[in-house]
Image 1 (cartoon, rainbow, N blue to C red):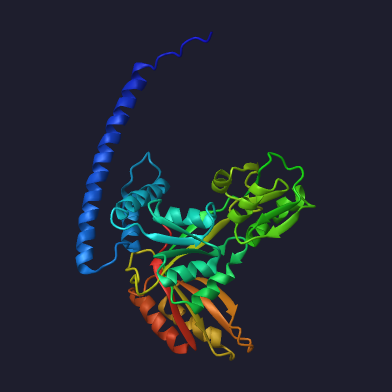
Image 2: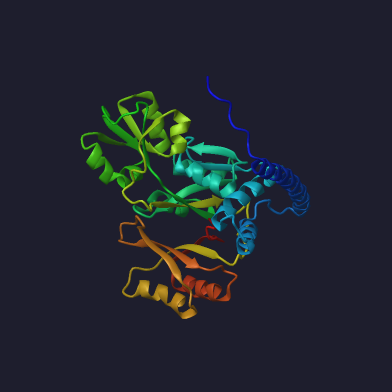
Length: 368
C-alpha cells in the first residue's frame, strides 16, 4: 500500500493563493477591457469604420513590449495580447478567415497566430480558393504563404496578386518544424511519404538518409498528407504536431526539415472594398509589383528613385509575364509607409518609369 502524498508546504500554498487572487483580478480587468472594446465597436458602427485595425494592434503590442519590465519575456507579449484582442473583437461579429486547409496546416497555425483563436475558420483546398472566397466576401480575410527561407517565394501566391483585387494588410512568419507522422509508431514499412511539394523539398536530406526507397508523393497540403496517412499504415505524412493530434498519428520523426531555422512568411489579404489600407504604425512595409519596358538600363532606372530618396528595398523577386516576349514582373518590398515623405516621393517617381505599377499593400511588419 502506497504512502499518502506529503501535504504542500505552507509557502507553496500561500503562493498559490496569491496566484488565484491575481487570476481573478486579471479576469475582472479583461472584462473591463472587453466592455471598453464593445463601446469602441459601437462608435465604429456609427462612423462606418472597420473593427480590425492592424496598425493599431501593432502599436499596442510594440508599446507593451517597450514598457515590459519582466520576468515575462517580450516575445511572449504578442501572442498573449493577440488572443485578448481576438476575444474582444469576437464579442461583435467573429471574423471569417480563409487559409490553406484542412485543419492542422501551418497556414491555419499562421492564421491563429495572427488573428487569435476567436475567429471563424474557413479552410480551403488551395491558394486559388483562398483568394476566391476572400474576393467574393465568403471570408473577411485570407492567409497565404508567400515565401520560405529555404525554398524561396511561393510563386502561385505571387501570380494571384496580379489577377485578383485583394491586397495585403498584414504579415506573419512561422518557424516551420516538419514532423514525419504515421498511424504506426515505427519507420518500418513506409512505402510513400505524402506532403506538400515544398515540405518534401525542405526534408529532402532526411528522407534520402532515412527513407531512401519510399515514394515522395506530392499532395495539396501537409494536413492532407496527414489525413491520408491516417487511412493507410503504409503511408506517412509530413506535417505539424497540431496535425498529428488532429488525425491521431504518431510522430515517428521529429523536426526532420534540413534547415533547423526554416521559416515561412505569410501574407494577410483582404478586399479593398471591405477594408482600408492600414495607417502608419512606425514599422511598416509597402509591397509593389511593377514591370518596365524591355530595354537596356530599364531595371537600373527603376531603382534610381529608391536610391535618390533613401528608401530601403527589402525584397526583389522577378516572375515571367507570360507574354512570350521575355518580359517580367518585379515584386518589390519597400521599408516604410506611403505616408512617409521619402517613400511617397520614391513611389511617385517609380510609377513614372514603370510600364505597370500596382501597390500590393502597406502593412505593419510582423511583431512576433
